[in-house]
Length: 601
Image 1 (spheres, rainbow, N blue to C red):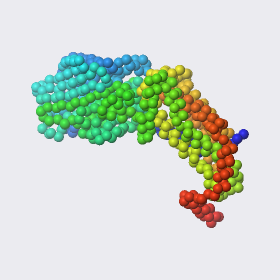
Image 2: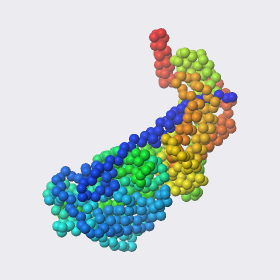
Image 3: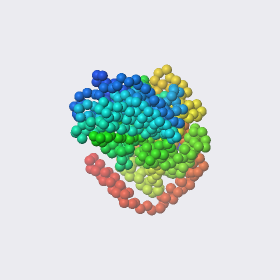
Image 4: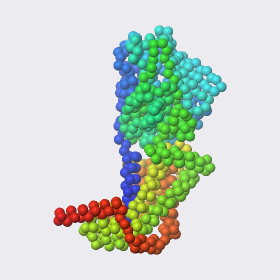
């Protein structure tokens, strides 16, 4: 049986994949959400309880005599609706009590809410001359609804004892996920200390929408953009708080859905917070992370006005890209070249394919295209392996001759490579070029909104895991179910690894890993990683490995001529080889190391 050479790429690639997947998927050092008690005679919503530090820091250091009392008027709920969303706004505090996306459902086939059950808290506060704190969340408003040909408008007005008023205005266009919000105040005796501005705070807990709360929580994150074109995020895994200047927008991203606040004038300074729940808490809760934004708004003694826009809808690149503020940056396409590949290559290509065929078929076609494009890289890698197999007997002879002399063994091996015109890294470097593509797809499939709710074969939702059997217990890191696509992908990985490593015995070189162990470890590792992952990616990985096996067999058995390669190597050996500067330096270093070793003896 032909003895196959260990491909360095197999070692490097598997170690890289194992390390990066472990860091990306299971380094979830989240802490419990802080719950703090409320002050007497004040109502605190669920969202406010989750992010009390934001509310505390948003209040200026002034002596507050009392909170202005609320009216005894009866609360009303006013509904505004357009073609894609419905808002239910309360006259008490002017809060959005419910916000649902029309014709969309969650994993339980129930209406899909972004706001419901007090998970949303909004408050604007003013400090008066008498040291009182006027807060909109405690005011009772009188509603007025007007409708034009292109929008609905809800105007909420609260008249103050001193003759002034506070007004909140919601403007909902006939179409789209973006709507306006405005705050106007007049006749408030603002504190004589002009340095005390009005305070704005918006706190929200993300609703759970997917059957795997842990998976959804992994892609739930606060993102924001500076006015100076700088995009940033808070930690997705632990408590995080940042004080940022010139904030152009803030996005509370809940995986496939986002609530984005866009101030008309960027916040001069904003306190942004994110507080997660543990995986165990998330699975038993309706909510994911809690987010908070607190900022100061300029305010003079005569009139106050602040305008905002809200986007509340799908985290869909096609929709978000239509807005001028670069809202699409809130989508996690990946860092550096990975993000560029996703936005410039995979997203437009996949959108084109899904316009022609069903989404599952589109994934298969995408896989075929990727494999064909990368096949020249694969070819170079296999040619390098073939050359190394030709040299294998001579390398084995060198290893036996210098069994106890590592320096001489390495020198002789490098000399053989030089004479034969073979580089051991020639197959590794081209194959490593595939890594950005692999990790780009690793990022792409979880954020591909187009896959949400799309079925293929037994997978009911390609954006989530598929289930062929439920387990009576939950296995750590694996879950309480069996997904078939990851299982098929793992089997394909096993056969591909077997073809590339063969019946490899324990490596003769000290420190080299046993490829038999890796051959069995890799599929098991992938099975655990992808059991709770998007089934669309598992489908891609399964088809990709099948194609790699087929391409590899064609290259090895049809394209590559082993005898021709052997003849070329023998011809190279006959030609005089002149060492370059690097090779000379390496040879000198190895000679010196060997000399020092002899001196020590």
